[in-house]
Amino acid sequence: MERIVVSAFANARVYHADGIRQAKESLNAYPISLALIEAELWDGDGVDLLVGVRKIKNMPYMVVVSRRADTRGIISAFKSGGSGYLLKTQACDEIVRSLRQIEFGFPPLSPKVARCLVDYLRHEDGALDELEEWELQMLSPREREVLILLAKGLNRREIGGLLDLTTNTISSYIKSIYRKLDVNSRAEATLFAVRCGLAG
Image 1: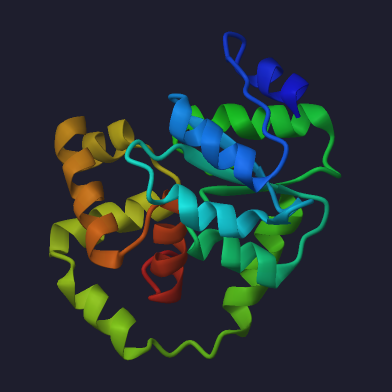
Image 2 (image 1 turned 90 degrees about the horizontal axis):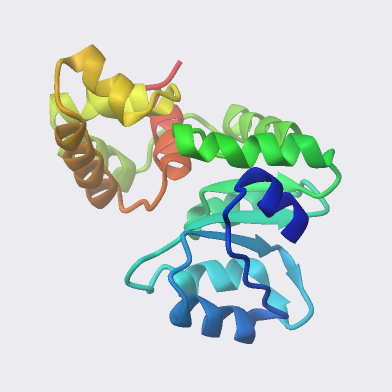
């Protein structure tokens, strides 16, 4: 994976951790902006590490890397704060391309993972629970507009252009949306939007 990261980000400084304990130490010791987290670690589940990472002050952009597209594991990863999910079975150049898309606001998702998410949402009963209904009502009309555009894959600059607002204002709306929905990533916000029928 180190070679892939360097291919995606030429000037990247890469830190390798052998297991959960060492990963936690590295995340607390270094200013890491992107964390590629193995789903299957020798000393535990990578998703457990995601939960711990959420407590870090400057939380990195977290992408889970796995050998298999397991729907339960994928959903768990996103609910725990993951922002992307890539499969090692993909060609290296495809993974590099996915990682580069982060800069433009697109969550890195392998095609099989995206299909798992679509199938999962399709088989849900479609009824919002009370918490989701309450969270939806908490959003202002403008925040709903921003959420819809965010779920469609637009970045902050593009959303600002469509709504005639500055990028800083859009960033403030996104922070407010994340706080109200209790999510930590575009992927989680998008899942909420799809679940609520806001993203077609």
